[in-house]
Image (cartoon, rainbow, N blue to C red; front, side, top):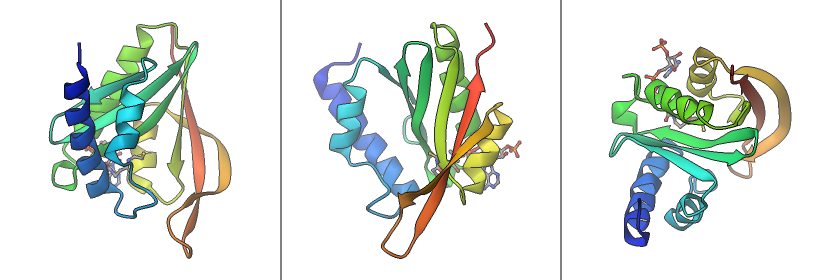
Length: 148
Ligand SMILES: CC(C)(COP(=O)(O)OP(=O)(O)OC[C@H]1O[C@@H](n2cnc3c(N)ncnc32)[C@H](O)[C@@H]1OP(=O)(O)O)[C@@H](O)C(=O)NCCC(=O)NCCS
């Protein structure tokens, strides 16, 4: 069980990692936003300490990967794939049947990671991510059915 103080520390840690991955202030999650997420009983997290984290939100038979991030110095060492596998395993032990996520259309690493874990593209959300006034990027929606 995580008490209030532990969750606040975790949120701070996750926010540092998120900022190191998503440099733009419009893209990274603040610690207060992350805290509000992880205080929600429907939100589960995979915590890899200083290396990375993954947040998942459940809603009956569906779930979404809210975000995941691996600190740059730990990337391309299997941490992201391992966290994603843990998140999928966690959800497969519930009544969840389908997982969704959004990933920026220019995020090659993210798209490849999710494809490797069995997600496939199911739609495009035009102009979804406002990185800055000059940079707006589409989101690709991806999904994975959980075999029961
Ligand atoms: C996307 C991210 C989570 C991947 O984490 P990671 O620990 O580096 O990934 P892994 O080492 O586990 O790699 C798993 C697969 O992802 C893909 N991948 C990871 N990094 C990649 C890169 N730089 N370029 C291309 N493909 C990449 C590959 O398919 C890889 O499998 P392979 O090693 O068999 O080729 C990480 O790059 C990251 O945190 N990026 C910034 C935040 C982000 O984009 N989050 C996801 C969208 S919300």
